[in-house]
Length: 401
Image 1 (cartoon, rainbow, N blue to C red):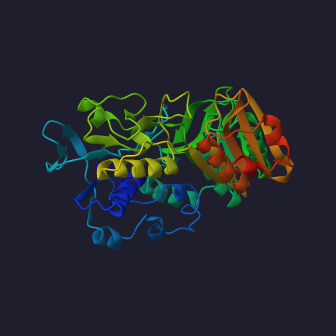
Image 2: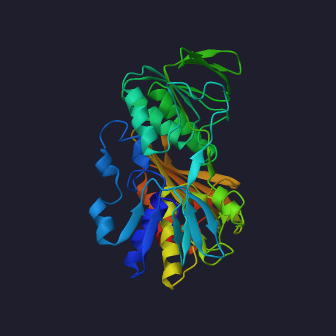
Image 3: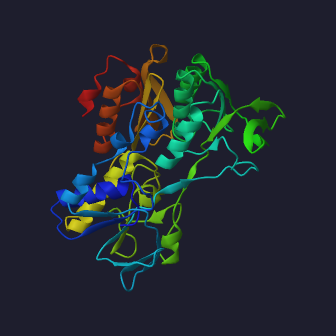
């Protein structure tokens, strides 16, 4: 497989668990063994999580399972006729099944000075090492982007006593992932913890002195000082090697519900894959960036390769930890025409149920793990409850299962 992240690691683990005995080889560009990325913006930054704890499995696991991990190995081309992959070091690798788990990369801040000292984008362990070192002496921090990564980092920075300004171009936080009520609650949460949150705020210039960031200028001409800047403005799938060998791509590498591309010997999983999703616009193609999606798609691909294929029909779900609040998302709420709140936001424990014409399509939960788990089961089973029933705390949701 090409790529050494969560999806590739899970695929290798699942293949062996499914009894697949043929050679399994991971061609990964990073020098580290496969590791978890979510703690990079939280536990690792706070020095509560070590690099060893980040590893998905220790080195002896991979050797015991006869899974070969080729580190610092960059694949540059695929010959589908010959079933062969060429790497940058000139090595050639043949395959029976090739799995593309190439992941995604952060969008670059298109402003002069984005390479200055003190300017960071967080994705890899190496990014996190550099950021953690700079963070130790930083005092005034600017975060560009009010998505999960930016807000998680901002939360850690405030808890550790740093001055934090969050700049978001949209009119609300996490706008692509959650509804307005959740956005508003998290805005209040960050403000209550002392962050300066500015919505509808575009950055027009990064101001650099002696090679180091010192401030940013906004569209309204105001200036915000900083000695450390972290930006998270979205990501794009790594599609180049797939395009070059003639595979179909859109926002991601196009696959069917068994994770196969148009070439049945080539599969794609994780952040780079775009698959039909029945929870999204009646089965339209969807690319998701989440740990759980990568894990679930890897398990599906393992079944396909092992000869017991099962269509991928997993409810999309996500999470984010910010301060004392755990946000859990089940389903996709963007197309909702109605939403109701279950519980009281003021208590810090509530859920928002989203509907289209009285059909439940998603649930966002804050510190309500029970609601989240029930929502995933409701959505997976096609079970429904009305908006009034969802809002009524006397309604026992379990009865709808």
